[in-house]
Length: 76
Image (tube, rainbow, N blue to C red; front, side):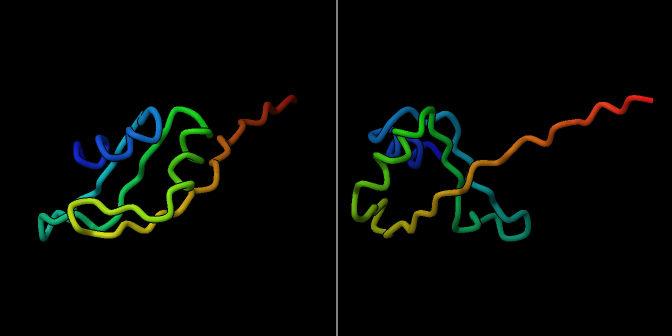
């Protein structure tokens, strides 16, 4: 996780880095989530053609923004 955070911090401020592990094998699941502080930080990452970390080429996908569900007030 620290290596990922350090690598991606060259593109902007990394707010969160999550690298899920498989409980049975103890290995990471070959994907992670990186959350940046600003949309510009995200664009900086995608401006680079390829990303290689520790000899492995990374495939990046941008997750669409989640919308927080809004609670509806029920008036009776």
